Length: 141
Image (tube, rainbow, N blue to C red; front, side, top):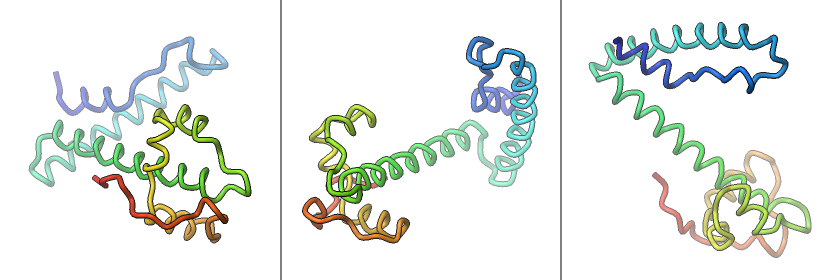
């Protein structure tokens, strides 16, 4: 048992043969993932040694950071869909289904900060009536 190689395997799972199309690419994909696991294990070991931190804690912290980044991205995408997408915003029900949220959750998922960030990235201000400044009701992690 090697903690770092185990963590690299968990962080870089192998696909199942039936999940790869075309099937003849399966060995190549597995080889690429093995290479990535090796590189990931080296990076994880170096980082944990350099920070004098248990590799499991470091892997968990990195996963938590990725999750927080995904949450930020979801809030920005929801702001775009409701506030920047032409004269007809995406329907709450459709956004809720796609994001795994409730329609009422969509209304409070983003705030003024996300509106500013999206406007900055796409170089455009929000569209008319839906673009109402409001405080962000969600706590940022």
